[in-house]
Length: 315
Image 1 (spheres, rainbow, N blue to C red):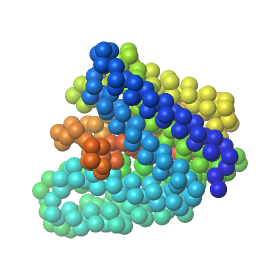
Image 2: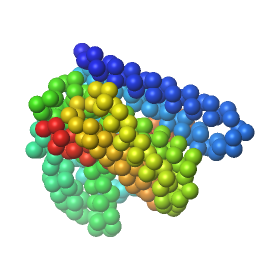
Image 3: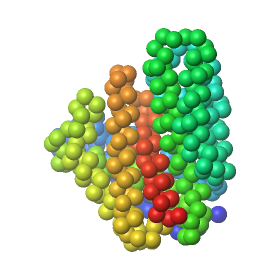
Image 4: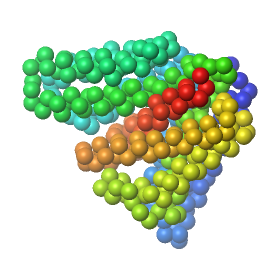
């Protein structure tokens, strides 16, 4: 069963989600403030999806195996959305079969067995060499490099990067127990979700300089810098409250800051893919809701960086 501190940390998450829900509903009713209704609606839809993610994560934290399985299913769904958005040819289907039904499950099996030397290189070395070889054997050379790159990028973001989130449960170190490892995963997910909300607030209140208007008009330098500083501060406060397993205050602040920075990088990168394909969302898993990849884009980029920083600090 989860440790008492984990339930306390989960309670903090619930309180933050309740605050976000109330704020979203209040803003939606204040038409006289001149706020963009579409932006508020997008924020409220994002909060609803956070409830689903956190609920699933809380259930999954009862077991490492359940957690790994959950993230494996999320990887499958996100990779499916990514490949659907980037059309492939009939000759790519054999390679995609190996990607979906061999390399993806194998990556999470290796994570579940804590085989770090293998799962850290399996996709970027073995799978990346296999994919172009299998497509070449199919004998279709039209846009060969473009097709190979699409599949490899999908595997890198949706499978390899995301698999580092459940891998946090298997980190080993002098101070690391199952309870502390579970809190590391909660911390990663919480800060990733919170950085999105904080960035939205900073951009709406002080945003003047859009970073890349062709990619995303709601991402501003003020929002990026403000959210990064805020999330770093939140990480330091959580450390003082005993909610992180890091030994030093600067370690918790640095790791939190990196989650915000990499989360921003993930959102911008995957927004660029959507703009290139001229679509608004990656998919519609639930009617009226964007795709799974739209909700975990920041987590995909933050997970591997946070894992290696935590491994360096705690191991």
